[in-house]
Length: 312
Image 1 (tube, helix red, strand yellow):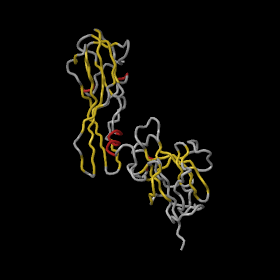
Image 2: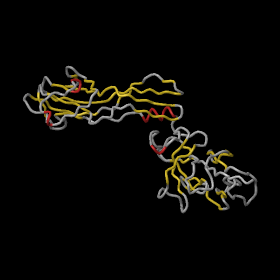
Image 3: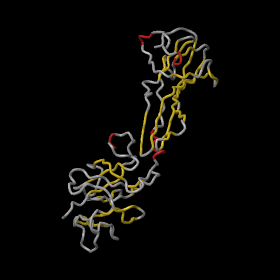
């Protein structure tokens, strides 16, 4: 009894000019228009220029004509072509590699592991790729669809620990200050100063890929206040709240003493804020030692003089 054959995809490596890592193209599950198969790559048959090739599942008989969708003669020939469903195709066109009637190329860079495109697919064993299907002449990004499919062997790129660790690095925080800092900005001795980080997301963040899970937890926003390179008395401040100053607050102090300050001497001060987090990487359910990670600082200056003023 004739069984429905499944289409298998070729996998190729796209060498991208500014990408240091060798990224292995994936074999992707087809979109619904490819009703002739369910995708997958069951038989790795050889390599071409050091790149893994797959063979369509089914009979693997020889012969010069071949190629009717059952796996015969799917391997790329010496002239750089292959026959699929009785039609001759170029194996590779620029960064694109033939894949079951379409052409694919890896998405660079790969989406973050928490991107909704992954769905239930594991980012450590799958790849995001662009797929351009007929009509194409040649394949281009115009009209290409971003899809997810299983890698053939090693996915390439960063290993899961590196990938998760890098995704959980933190950006430079915004610097909220009242009165504001910057060129020509002035504050006053004994004036209540407010500090905040402009809606800083302090929620715990988790990423996962394969057997690796990374969790990043907020510790504090750290404010350095310096005059002539020396720490101002009572600093640095380690703020764990995010109370933004608004004009209706008048001259009131910040409700969180760790996020407010009063200058006791005139001068030009340098203000900087960075954020500190704890990162834990677990593998196979076993957590590693906590790591402390700190953002790059955001910096401004303010001239403090004798006098009185509202914070705004």
